[in-house]
Amino acid sequence: MLKDKTALITGGGTGIGRAIALVLAKSGVNIALNYSRSEEEALKTCQEVKDLGVQSKIYKANVAVDAEVKAMVSQVTSDFGALDILVNNAGMTHFVDHSDLEGMKDEYWDEIFGVNVKGMFFCCRAAAEELKKNRGCIINISSIAGLTGLGSSIAYAASKAAATSVTKSLARVLAPEVRVNAVAPGIVQTRWVEGKEAHISKLAEGTPLGRVAEPKDIAEVVYSLIANAGFVTGQTIVVDGGNFI
Image (cartoon, rainbow, N blue to C red; front, top):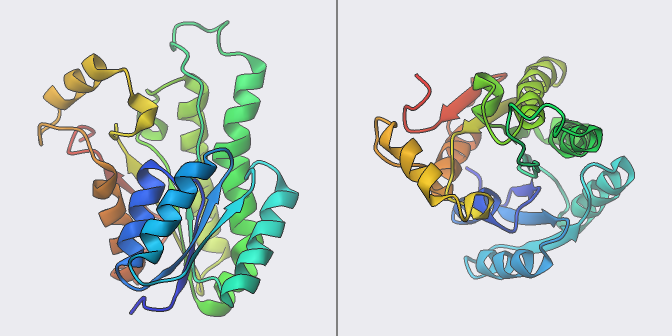
């Protein structure tokens, strides 16, 4: 069903993005990997994808810069001949305690919203025409922070709430040709949470399934929305082991 399709995954070299790239590649999807700083990791993931028998290339772009996004999407379409799937996984945060209102600096708001909201929208807009032509789909990686108001900072939680809203808006605008959904993970074992073992252990204890997510847990849900959910659009699927019930 997905064989020979092409997916662009932003922030695709590490963590959740890497896991999504690998699970899609196993189904025969060609993978375009976006990165902004992690070139070494992107190259490694690219080779892992190629080893699964599909095509893959890496593309450096800051998703918060519209011109770079447009150039990237154009190049991906040229290199692969089509674009069928967009996964907006690129994200950033600043860790600021929610009670530290003065610590939530103006520039932090701008940087977080620049990547997590504007960057997501820029990618969707740049890919929209090609995705509509190919009756493709978009998956936005959000966070339960956007539903709970918790998380690494107030601005981060707000950005993920905005991402949910943009997902709903684009699901209407791009229908019926393109489905647009979001996946909202809880805590995931990635480099974002390195050094926060005590915090992770506490969260795991309060989760019905008794652990926090691995990147592959998120990737499996993303795959399902792409391959097996043809009548689902505008939805945000929470993947947190039952913590947010």
